[in-house]
Image 1: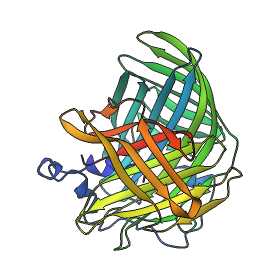
Image 2 (image 1 turned 120 degrees about the vertical axis):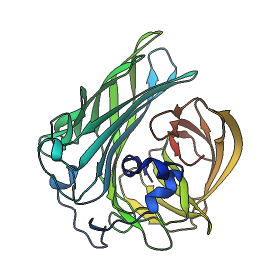
Image 3 (image 1 turned 90 degrees about the vertical axis):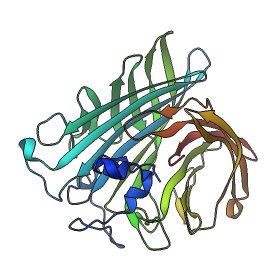
Length: 346
């Protein structure tokens, strides 16, 4: 959400006639599935693992990296879980479906790959302790989410990264209950935005050692959008002074719904309600036949924030089963930094 970012797992379940509805399909009925509840008490390591009684869920990691060549890079590793039914069984009868997305973005290129799997056969899944999320040979694993190794590959790229958390988990909204619309749709949503990252990217132009910062989003729900909401713009920004911001705008026929979390350098999280942040597209680019905003003005008056958020490259289009834009950004203005931007419904 991401939001992240993020609700593609549900779309994987939709019959073909509904695909034309795009992300609006995420506002469909959730009959039979659990619904997020305010006051939910997170328990770890349990909640690092899957929640099969909810319809959709994701493990979503992005990283802003700098290579030994001095260039900026971005990495995405995502595992989505979707459920046909709110149950978990072994074998091909399992109603749990899995989808993986991986990408590397450079200043002039965007490499991506996608994997699909049925649950219950061992090809994909998540365990909470020891911590491991995988699909095929792609893995995010460690003794716990504080210390991870990350690997994925596509036809034109491969990466091996190590991640170490240097701060606490952050819970969005009301202690992890993140509202997504005026009608009350919501998710359970927490992040680990304090990863220190190092490793190697294997690219067509050669191998490059990288270091940087990573951000993991964990979110699950069953009906995260209202019926009129068709897409979103989600920002995860890390400022040079150590503060961070998660903010999103959900676009709907009745107007936008926004939310944000200000994360101080020490990990203190302050949730900000609808209307606290504003997002103004300043420049668009023609990307895969679509006009996509690639420069934004983001303001947050409560924290005297007024910044421009600019894509490292407009080419960061995820031409996967359900298409979206996802890529690294640079931040300038009265704060400087780096981050990630996700945009759907364009």
